[in-house]
Image 1 (cartoon, protein in one colour):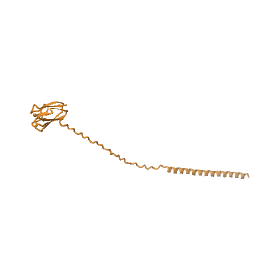
Image 2 (tube, helix red, strand yellow):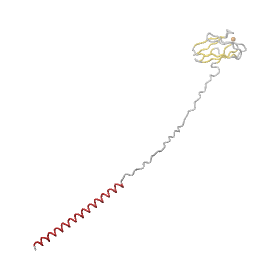
Image 3 (tube, rainbow, N blue to C red):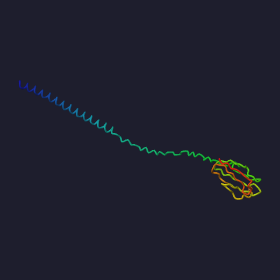
Length: 166
Ligand SMILES: [Cu+2]
């Protein structure tokens, strides 16, 4: 009687233990499954979140520099050659005289004598002299040094003139 009782109790305890073991196994399985699910989900997310290779489109925008600089070439202002007014550096030989008798010019001026007389004349001085100048002929001399230059006609010594170079 007591033995049976004991056995019954033992069996009951065993059964309970077994139940608990089964429950534990079930829980373990559930845990494993859940862990697997978590792992799978993590893997899925990782694959989804894999860095998609951004296709870096080569922005090869050809920078065509518009070198259309307006070539503003200023028209070369042609310095009109200021021709000296007639008379400034010209001497007329007429009526056996030099006109003007005294001429004042700047250094570097070329003086020109023109024989407008019917007779032949010339220019004679210590620094410059001309050949005989028939009617209509001219003679030029450039004065590069300042000073007063007296001259006369070699044919007619009474004809005198003066160039003042400043
Ligand atoms: Cu003369």
